[in-house]
Amino acid sequence: MKKTFSRFFLAATLAAAPLLQLRAADVVELRQPRASKIVVQLRFRNGSAADPVGKEGLTYLTSQLVTEGGTKAMTAAQIKDFVYPLAASYYARTDKEVTTFTFEFHHDHLEKFYPVLTGLMLTPTFSEEDFKRLKSNQLNYVEQVVRSSSDEDYSKFALEDLLFRGTRYQHLTRGTAPGLRSVTLDDVRNYYTSAFGADNLTIGIAGNYPASYLARLKADLEKLPKTTTARPVVPNVTAPNGVQVEIISQPNALGSAIYAGFPLAITRANLPDFAALMVANSYLGEHRKSYGRLYDKIRTTRSMNYGDYSYIEWYEAGGQNQLPLPGVPRRANYSSIWIRPVQIAEGLRKQYPADMGDLKVGQGAFALRLALREMDNLVKNGLSAEDFELTRTFLRSYTKLYATTPSRQLGYLLDSKFYGLNDYLSQLDAQLAKLTREDVNQALKKHWQTQNMYVTIVTDDSEAQALAEALRQNTPVPMSYSKAVREGLPAPVLAEDEQVAGYKLNVTEVKVVDTKDTFK
Image (cartoon, rainbow, N blue to C red; front, top):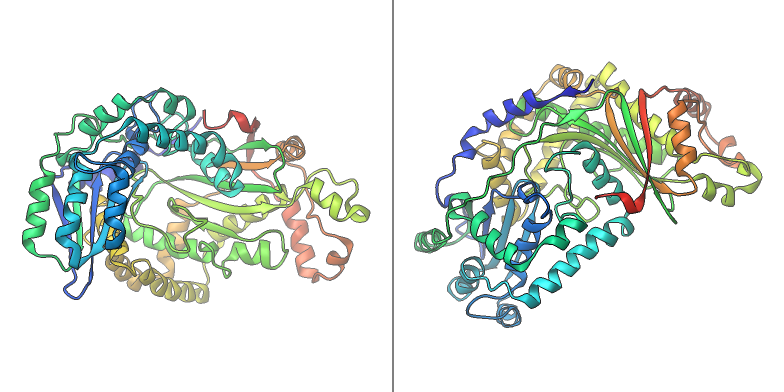
């Protein structure tokens, strides 16, 4: 029987209730009198979770057509030529629950750039030529790029597909192949009119701007039609009964990329517990940092891969961003562990034929057990006083780097509004300042566990079935070392290897899925 987390998400939704009652053209301001740059962010409450059934990818495609297309006054090419000497930039980002249009330009070009900004938002042309080009690019990403460009991102998106299965959070923000194929240009035009309304908008503005500019912008954007489509519904997320594994069999994969996670009952809106989990999460494995527990155990000590990290919310574009991006707020949340690709049996046999000539399973099963064992130990034993103080001190410094640009600062303020907070980053720092070790250890026992998890593994087709059987049977799978490496390892590491190899996972289901059958 599955355990439901709907009551927790209901509580989080109620806690953030004011953000669901936006007035027309609601405004978030960040005045910076000495700033030379002005940033305008237009945040609509209609992410990919609002895609109509059978039209998955419509929200993303619509947003891209706005920023990559033309206006009633200028073609897309004319806009690019006009904007280039201004050194201005603009783009759209669509996530599960919000779509944000960002415009950045120098204060000196306040008036000159204004017709471009308002033209794109109020009179987009949605030409047939732009539609075909952008739809083709988006379809190519969904059908090809997501499966071939990065096994790490592939396993990450696959985990979301599994965790949110059956809900409007399940599909990629860029949609599905069948959904995109069914989208027409009329769908885009009608959807923009019905979903991107002034009553569904928050205007964010940062920099040195006159009050008259904001007043005019607000008045002009209120010309947008009233929203008639429903806002994204928070999914009723469930955790599995046991550890549920989906292994994606992919030709020519170089390793086994692993993502494991489970629904998390809290978001930033629940700041006391969220701040406590941030400390535990940072200790276990901050994104792209080499001093986390997982990184130390899996990469530093055993040289198994390039990195291993932990998360307590969605991390946008982790391959390109060392710091978390604003603009991807969500009310349905989950905790996860990312194990970057570890070696498969075929590769190890070729590399060490004398030592591993008969190896059947690579390092995937061992790496998963090692990571979950570390998480389990943290939940059971908690943080030591020393580790708590060091991690909290680091985190208070590190989070101050989250918003080092006006665009990031404004983005985090908009996110704060989404979660019903005034200023998330300053409130977070205040919470961290008064946090105790007991707070962290209590939050760990309340919110983290390893018995009921979703796991996705993208691996080579030569490894998929053997790995599945090893996990299904839950039999010991020793760490694979060459003889020379094993002889050079300290005795405590080898002793720990034996414990990890025999560590039992609560596996209740293992499936092997062909790569061509994912994201349907």
